[in-house]
Length: 228
Image (cartoon, rainbow, N blue to C red; front, side, top):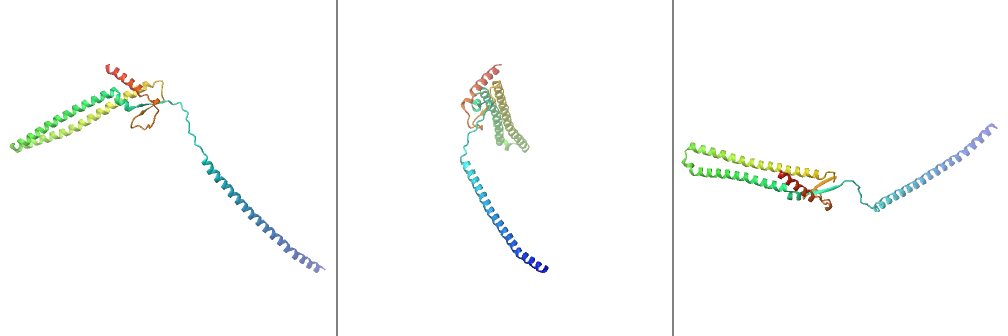
């Protein structure tokens, strides 16, 4: 009886095993099927989300409207036309005349010495053959020295004129800066800019132009200082 019971139990176990294995197989297939379907759905959802973001990104850029930026500031600005100042400021006119006279005097001095050297050189060419060899050497050495002195004089005169112009320009600029500082006491303006043909200001409203007022004050101040 025991043997028959054992045999029956073995047969029952053998009959139940395939059933369990089949159930596990079906379960695994079902899980893998569900997993693959979920992956496909997830990928589709991601694709749709990316497409929506892509469309929103470019359509929103097309609809952007750029508004001008308004900057509120307490700054007050004016400008002076420096070309007008340098053409009509009496100090500048007098300075130009002074420099022109100085340059003319220096040039006349240089020309006079140059003509004297040329006359002496021409005379030597005429009488040089009649002079002794020793006298010729002396005359030639003297002429050579005078020529070098003349070249040095030309160089020095040029430097003197240049230094004088620079010094006068600084005086004119200082007088303009000093007057504008007094003119702007208060202060009236936060900035007073320079406008000219060479300046970087491309446009400025005429209402900001204070050139005439500054020019008038400069000339009045210069006349007073000149009569002192």
